[in-house]
Length: 356
Ligand SMILES: *Cc1c(COP(=O)(O)O)cnc(C)c1O
Image 1: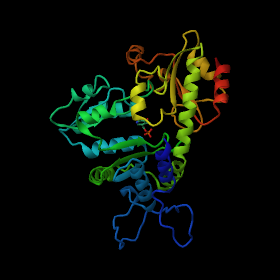
Image 2 (image 1 turned 180 degrees about the vertical axis):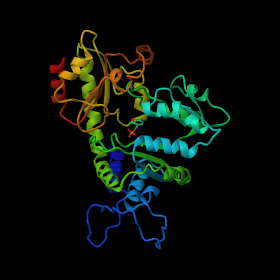
Image 3 (image 1 turned 30 degrees about the horizontal axis):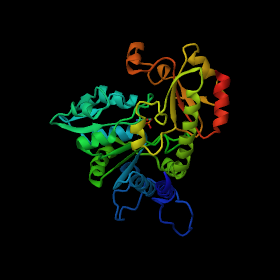
Image 4 (image 1 turned 120 degrees about the vertical axis):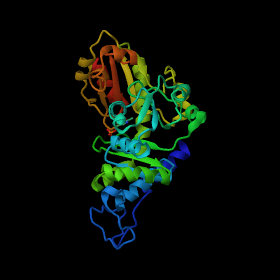
């Protein structure tokens, strides 16, 4: 990432620092208050309005990191997603949404958003034409996600953006790499001031703000995000390459490998290939026993922490689908999603080798 990385790390550490008061602290103080002087300029200051001092500081950091005018921090990735969709869509509007999408988002759109009179279509695939095909005169939102989970397919942002549309809103589940220590649930939105105001208007009513204590903790976690993600990218590349050479492994899915079908696309639009590696164990081995045999790598359902974790999608994230539905998606019972942490790659390899 070179020069760009430097900028990113500086922003991660310093952007949104609060003005230091009489104590001259090196770290922004935590203002833990639900009540503020109403005669001040900001008469509507309140945590649920996303405008306490610590929220303002972190909102600014998120905006800077995503190169947007404005940012908002939420209590979860799902709060960020639902507040954004309900903030920008009204009854009679239509959205186009990628077919391979995070389960919670899929559920919200497929089973809830219709209750608000909002129409939607899932795409049939991930190509730009798949999105274009579903657009209607009343389409207001096109929702994309990349890489997909757990197969790590890459969506061609540039083709979709060029075919139409541009990107107006960037959403992150900050529970993942922004937090990075498997201890904070949060979400972020970055966009123009105008869209931010529309989203915030609805979000204030939905009440999905993050508590100021967690805002402060998340701000601290983000300070090391660049370093952590760099280390995880490197480790994941080493692990993916190593796994591909193991006879016990049927295939490895990692956008950084030349064997990945979207490798060239990933190379053109990602500055690192991420910390998640998915792989299929050979049919001779039981995926459940393999996971149970791991000692260093923990069985866990979330990902992106500094500690390595692994899960079997067929038994967790995709357990509600039938076996046929999973096969249609390409998710076999032998598939393992491995979130690579910052432990030494050698230790991770020894752990996997003994678990085989
Ligand atoms: C984790 C995740 C979410 C949900 O975020 P939470 O913080 O768990 O609410 C949504 N979308 C994607 C792509 C995710 O990875």
